[in-house]
Amino acid sequence: MTDLADSPLVRRLADWDDDRLESLADEYDTPLYVMDLDRVTENYARFSAAFPDAHVMYAAKAHTGKAVLEAVLEAGGDIECAAWGELQRSIDAGADPNTLQYTAVNPPDHDLDYAVDLAAENPGLTITIGARDTLDRLAERDYDGRIAIRINPGIGTGHHEKVATGADAKFGIPYDEVPEVADRVRREFDLVGIHAHAGSGVLTDGLEDHCRAISRVGEMARRVGDDELEFVDVGGGYGVPYREDEEPLDLEKTADMVREAVGDLDATLKLEPGRYIVADAGLILSTVNTVKEAPDTTVVGIDASLATLIRPAMFGSYHPMRNVSAPDREPHPVTVGGPVCTSADVFAHDRPIARPEREDVIAIGNAGSYGYELASQFHSQPRPAEVAIEDGDSRVVRRRESLEDVTRVEREADATGDR
Image 1 (cartoon, helix red, strand yellow):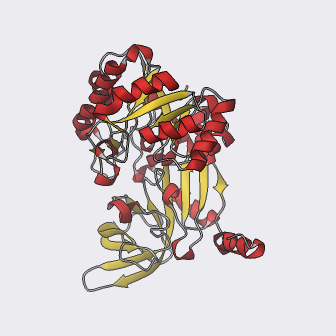
Image 2 (image 1 turned 90 degrees about the vertical axis):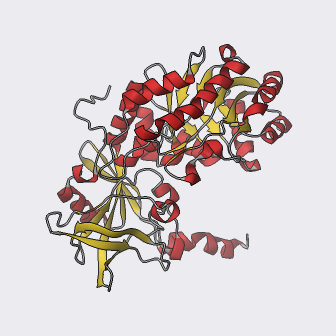
Image 3 (image 1 turned 180 degrees about the vertical axis):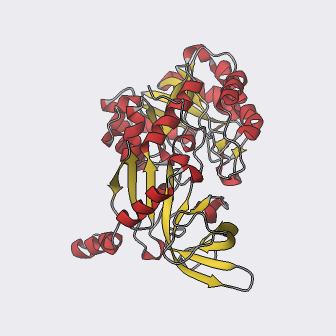
């Protein structure tokens, strides 16, 4: 059992060792993702301790790196997957397929084929459906195994409208249709659970809306017969503070409010934290290459870009930044951007940072969640390396891509004529 006595509720960017980070940048080059696996284990243990009677699964989509999945499994966690590739990567990391939950959203045929074939050999696998059509497609494949119904509670929560899934028609069975769908599932499949996910990035001040959403999940579970269900899954969405002045999620209060909102259940409560487990366990190291005085600001160019971390461009997300090469210099408001040819490739506007100079290393915090997962090869930029820290040691867990990696699929197509 991980000792949480000395583990802070949130790891701020200033809590990382500046000298260590600069040495990692020197050793492995930049841009560089750094993941602290010990912190992943601590976060999972802390969350699980707050919900001792619940089944806590890690939402793999937050970070599907093998080293992270292995750390979660070693800590005793199970894994929830949103795509067939996450199922396979979880198995490659050592997960028992019978413990996996596959929560599909408009799954392509290939995904369903893979899940059905996997379940044929591993009947403990659970498939979560969010559309009647998915049931039809599973029946066409002669699947009659474990099903959880994803419901749409009609209430979305979270840090941005693009992650407020609880009110988005894309996700889940319309609320009032769930009892009818449950009757069909009981006739043709094995109904084991009810599932919902209200949104992402919820902190303490957003818990009331979050709990209004999951109270509807508890109500629906009782309506369809929670005494016949194995679990009621209220998803994840539990956040971490990205801004320095935000307080960490009050887990004790969260647990109390979630239990009260869901209400009395005969079924097991299930939760799927992702961001909470990995966000503050990861960061990006990047090197300053340009310092340009402009009329209204000082522009600092770094070698990371929106291809490295897209969250600021996609969601307008705030990520803390720190000059780890010279943290004691006088702070200076700067605009920090990358080398991609779009005005969206900016990490911060007029952000006070210890005045950067060329070759300084800038750390971008809270990048462990939906960071590398959303990295791309835009501008033909090879994706960065990723280093894991564990027990004080570091190792490469994803090598830096080369231009040959970027163009490999084209060259293979040219060689085989397979386009």
